Image (cartoon, rainbow, N blue to C red; front, side, top):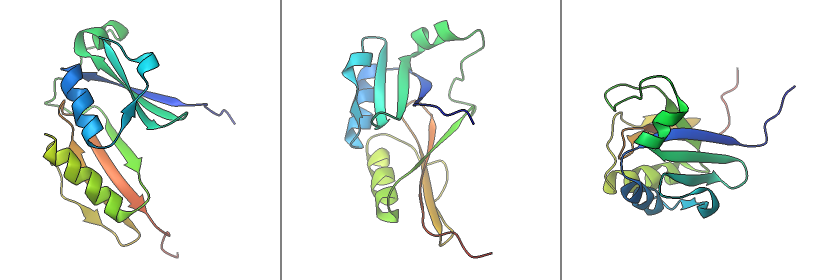
Length: 135
């Protein structure tokens, strides 16, 4: 079976300064070694998961397709955190920092998730999963 060492999710952004402030407001940091005036390397889990937040004009140099303009959804990024309280905390911070709610929270008992769109319209689902129900 093929295994990956890490994952980088590339997303276009409109304003790098505002994007940095948004994610820092949620408690995340950046790898400045891979950040410059065209890109930010958002650390989701050190050594494993990153999001490259690329200035739109720079992002366009990596594809021959149209870039989503915020009116359509091309990807949903789901992240798992350690507790339901952490889900609530992160989504609350995102909304306070300029993010938008696009869907109400869902509680399945064994799984709780909530959602927000960041300041560039990218949709994020934050979830906590406990023990799966018995079958």
